[in-house]
Length: 140
Image 1 (cartoon, one colour):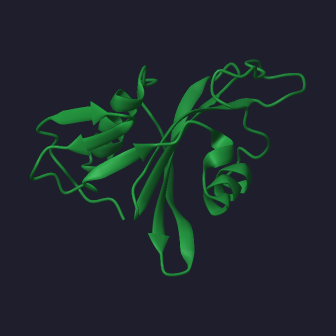
Image 2 (spheres, rainbow, N blue to C red; image 1 turned 135 degrees about the vertical axis):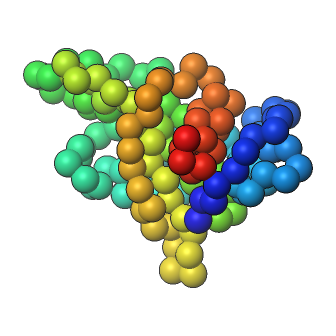
């Protein structure tokens, strides 16, 4: 489960972000580059969770950015995983465009959804996504 943190600094090497010493968030997150590479329970939670059900296009893939028509209306942006936590960002097309962050925790029985909420700003990089994840977990 995510715990509150204060990000003191970060280092990004080979797709892994390690938070500075003293962070209470999981010490490091590995980058997951494809929606299809996420654990099945995480994908299933996003595909069937809350009111936004249906397909999710891969990052940089085409998706329907409007409210009407066919095709996925959501697109995978970034994912960060540790042995005990996962965070996934998905953008939603349409007149009410927004980016949502899904948080999961690994428990004895597998991955469970902890929460999903909109991000205030679309992260431009994976590092920015992880920082936003930690800030949201800290409540600010």
